[in-house]
Image 1 (cartoon, rainbow, N blue to C red):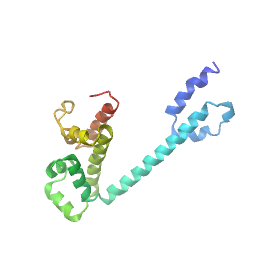
Image 2: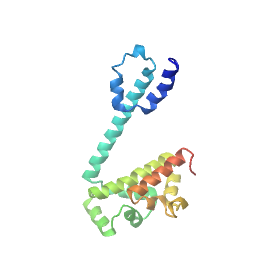
Image 3: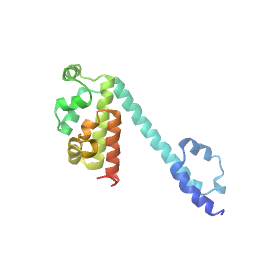
Image 4: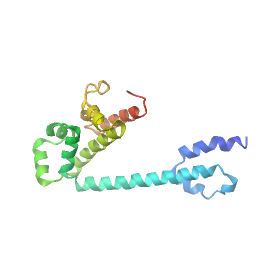
Amino acid sequence: MSLLFPLLLAPLLIFAVPIHWCYSVKALPIQRAPFLRLALSSCHLASYNWHMAHTASEEAIRRVKQGLPYGEFEELRANLGVSVTRLAAVIGVSERTLARRKREGRFKPDESDRLLRIIRLYQRAVDVLGEDPATEWLTTPKRFLGGKTPLEFADTEIGAHEVDQALGRLEHGVFA
């Protein structure tokens, strides 16, 4: 049992150890628990990944609060190959408001938040499917979305999450 316990515990430590626990484990004598070495290196990696994601999130929050430049809307529209009206509807901005934002050069924070949601979804689709297939996938109606396109379905946070989940299933071959 004494040899079996570390073998059973090590995978749990590698995949399920909270980051804050990693630092408390350092106090344990490694010589008495050599199986923890792998878990500790995993903790450092998790801590690094958390820090990088946190830094990226801070930058995104700063940009949203500042307001995204109008050019980001145009770039996304061009990448998706959709009309101004269609993309404006997805981010919940009227055409008159969009014309004002074009003159001002920047979106308001709430509009920026919705625009960034679609930008991130597009980037995720490109990562999973590639550029051209991602554009086609996002703009083609899907039965599992009630006949809506993933782009239209992503006009709310909950809808965008569902589209992101579908991309995850595609990425892992679970859902076609």
